[in-house]
Length: 92
Image (cartoon, rainbow, N blue to C red):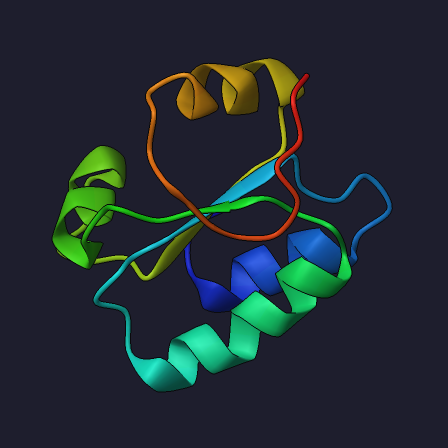
């Protein structure tokens, strides 16, 4: 899931999210819309990445947040060592 609204929708869905990445330089409004929901749903949130870097991953100029549904992919991303921004520090 790419973008604040899509990540919010995925977090609310039955399967939920395995992980979220939120750009350190995301607009405060965007962060305020998504982070509290992710925390409430128990989703680990990684930071240490810019909106430009997140955008490059998905072929866009800038992206505030990306949600990961697949647990195996989430585990691989966590193994990269990005800092936990908020949420539980789950280990799969």
